[in-house]
Length: 403
Image (cartoon, rainbow, N blue to C red):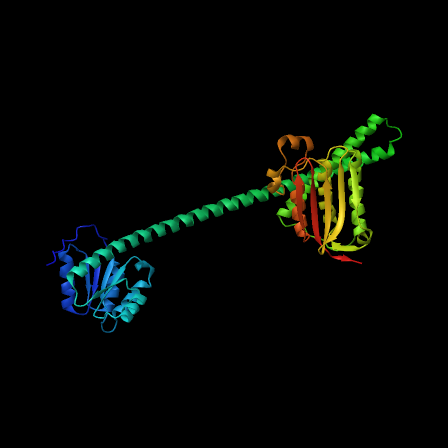
């Protein structure tokens, strides 16, 4: 003979148990057995409709519902309860005389968690109720934890969104500041550069060599500052998407000659061997692109090559057509780029180590600006570099050449 089950002594969820059955005898049996086992919060309904009403009112932790009832059977009650999010933790037991696999599948698909077979054995009843309440309690804890996490995630999302808006506002203020300062500096710098040119051209015969050097230094420094300011302005325009690509028919010969005329004085001054390799048949063609921006990218690449190549070194410019693309290649015999800096090379305001930066100067925006301009032009830039052996940069553009 089996030993009697001890009364239930564990803490159970406060929401109680709801019994739904149209048979008074079954309701009485279930109620008495559960009360004897120590369950006090028990609600009783004699129909499916009444059961739904009591469930909405008390939100029980566990429901025992008869399958076969008139008007609204147990499956309908189960579906109604389970489709509501508020009843997610509720454990639902269907009470039935059916025991075929197909009937059990129908009950599970309706949302039932467990079954009790008639006639009900009180030992099985208490075991399933005990297990069901434990599961309901865990589901309630999980449900509350999820709700708390959702609240925290929503709160954190609002905080991140607010911080993001603050950062965007700060970035806009920074861009406006850079644009305003650059515009304010550009006007007097242009005047200084023009004045230097005029002095040099009009008074060159009456100036001694030292005075000529002073005027040349003024002109060179002013030009350098103006170039830096132009880069800053372009970078600000890129951030605000204000730069527009002006595509037009460009003679490749004119483009190459313009680049050479700008870069050759810098190479001569530093005694760099500047070499241009341009195929005659290719340079005679025309290109559909933005000449100003292409020249700007090439000037940045050649300027860097000259800047980081010591006196007597070589800077080589080559134009070729490869796999349907125009390739502008700039190589040098300069100091090269350390391997640990390769992945950072195109980042904004990236510079070499402090000692090298102090020696060679620059703000670290030329390459970053060039890469972004190349993308706007429909191209790309890649590079290879060996520390101590120089660097090679390749600027690829779609081949839109015309005869």
